[in-house]
Length: 131
Image (cartoon, rainbow, N blue to C red; front, side):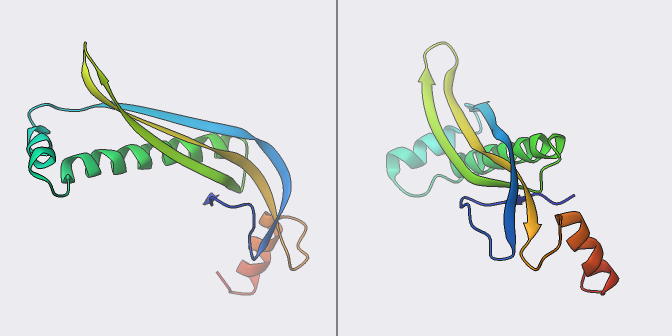
């Protein structure tokens, strides 16, 4: 089942039928000093930091995957009000850590065209050959 994810509360096609709960995901990743040595050099010399950008993107995707799993467990159709934040913390005993936090609200949706549930709307679309 596809979970719709948005940072807003408004959908053109859907209305929120029920709020199922506030959900969060946290990802903490350490940096590999050998691989990330080039990132340190790039930071000193200036320019884009591809190694750090890649780690942030991977952590964001992992957090979104966790959010989707939690939404599925609640039998939600969507996550609204999504917020993604990250921070890089320097800890003396283990080096830099990337911390990503995702939060949002799991909801059930209903199509605006009058279907009583998203499942019914999907079934109608399949019958009509729209999907």
